[in-house]
Image (cartoon, rainbow, N blue to C red; front, side, top):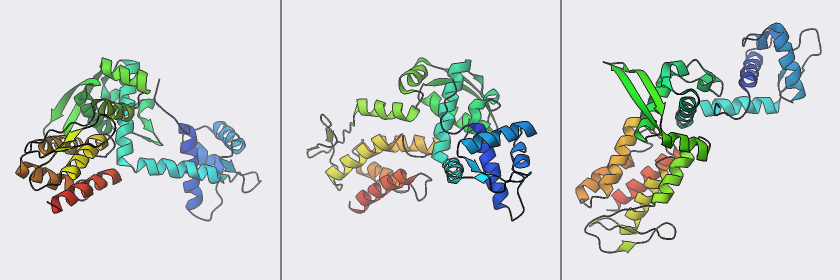
Length: 298
């Protein structure tokens, strides 16, 4: 079963086409022709308009022989929400991972190029690309949700990816409804924060019951270091990073555990670039600010 929610594919296509047609200029819009331009026959376009009127998605602006319907406030909100999500790279990456996992479970997987031509690739008015799914396959393979085999070409990156779901991937679908972010958050919560930094001068308790992070390095505030590491661990699944930056992120978290002041300083400098030199979302920028504050205060 395809992982999906929200307005239907047809509603999104038709509403977006009508909104753009009315925004294009003062000419009278032939709503039937506009809707038919999304791939429907004329009679199908008429039926969609009638259904959309009844559902409060469009309204008639001119009761003539040529319907000139345009989206209602609710219809406009659907298009605006879809466009906002499409512009969110983190959301697109999460949906690519979710849909890849669903496709590999429902169909048995195989060559990801076949996925691009299915409804699984459809997300908020557009079809995700092979590149979106190849990136998702690399991430899910690292997390052992799927097994992925890649064929790479010099200068072209991944040109073929074959995917097979693993038992852990099925667990994520069964127990978390395919919500990979929820599974990651639960996994990290179960593990709990663990930091073992040498040269420690005391234990700093952070987080919930049973959470103890031992952290103190010469020149760095112990409590602030402990809080930063815990925030980095818990925020890892929610920030928007490329696969390469995600791998560097994880490596630098480990650097913060070494207790070596010079290595910790380099790791803090890298984290300080989140949201500035390293593309990420608002949470990543906030974590970068925490790292910079600790670095400046050292």
